View 1: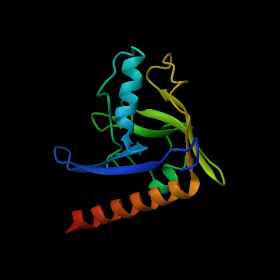
View 2: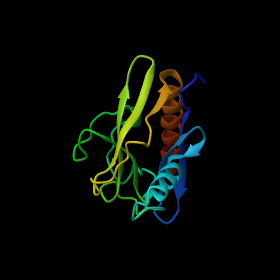
View 3: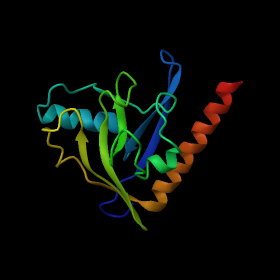
View 4: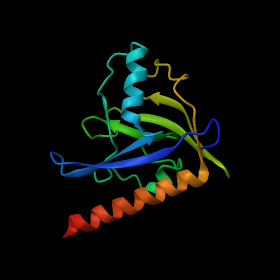
Length: 155
């Protein structure tokens, strides 16, 4: 990995109580859920710790995930991208939003916010810079895994 660049991945987990799959981004192998909890707790934000959950595609129409995680604007969520939803599964309830900027060689996540708490300062959370080829490969793997899980759900 080039200096200053992070590794991105996406974990797909099954939520039996919701009968749905949830997507959690990982940065350098650490779930974004853990990274944001650590940041908010250290900053003394309340509420914090356990407030977020993965994105649940069956609960919200994100559109193609490879477009969503490249920062395509979603109706109702504004110009930023939901990278985590609420722990309840509703992306509109308590989402972690970020600006996602793809370029030729990089994808950058920055300008994080919790839309229901606009006074919170996330300026020292990130930015996270990813190699575009590695990022695209991770998105391809995510899309393939989601397609496989949807196919097995139909059986």
